[in-house]
Amino acid sequence: MPELPEVETTRNGISPYIHNKVVTGVIVRQTNLRWPVSPDLVTSLLGQKIEEVDRRGKYLLLKTQAGTVIIHLGMSGSLRILQPNNNVGKHDHVDIVFEDQITLRFTDPRRFGCVLWNEGNINKHPLLAKLGPEPMSDDLTPAYLHTKSRLRKSSIKVFIMDSHIVVGVGNIYANEALYEAGIHPKRAAGRISLARYKKLTDSIKKILRQAIDAGGTTLRDFTGSDGQPGYFKQSLRVYGRGGEACDFCETPLTEIRLGQRSTVYCTQCQR
DNA sequence: ATGCGGACCTGTTAGC
DNA sequence: TGCTAACAGGTCCGCA
Image (cartoon, rainbow, N blue to C red):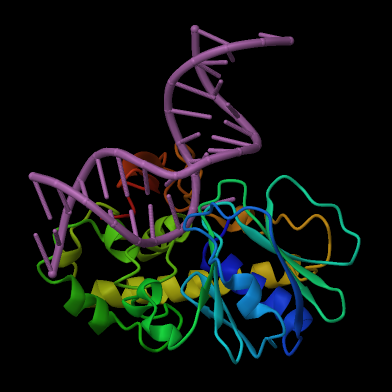
């Protein structure tokens, strides 16, 4: 499920339960994730206090004095807050238990996610060091995208989904942002004007903000058992709507594959 | 440096 | 009803 809005919603959801709490237990049931769970996670994290719950791109960062837990949810991962005496499911790979017996649980059927332990400067971690700017910060500007894209022949959709260019724009929101900006997803990134990058930048920020706000209202109860959303589905204009009528001009939406990802757009509204 | 395809996994759904 | 194939919200890696 997780695109950036869901990761941010997760961060907001779990933070009140774990911020400034001391870890009293760590249970690893499955080490074989995208990368092996750090072997020293358990011994390193025990007794540490979670001083900050941060996010960088789609990576969640639980910071302690001794180091940082790096969590990525991959395609199918989730984090939940559970009370004591909970039932353990097949894909519940890692639990972090706190002084008040509250459990933070990492669940991930496809195991594309990861749970890593890092000591030292977190910004120098190989997974984080070369990431592009946060999309909703002032660092993402039209000029930045325009400059970075000169000479680039790859499509604009693949370009904005590249985390080294800008983090957090996943497949759903790349489709949505390009529709809103009126840009054809196959257009070469290097052949888009500064003015159009202005439009695209605005669209990315706006759509991510809307999705976070929507997630914030329907996913706020992180101790509930039915954590699964569906909150933004109703507001999607193109994603998952191939063949249906464009909201604006009623032309049937076209669905293709770009970089092995489902891509939906309006041939009339997007050039 | 950029661009592309493959790889990592399981669960759900569409089609025969 | 049951089997098989295709596809799913991510992104790193290796090779051309």
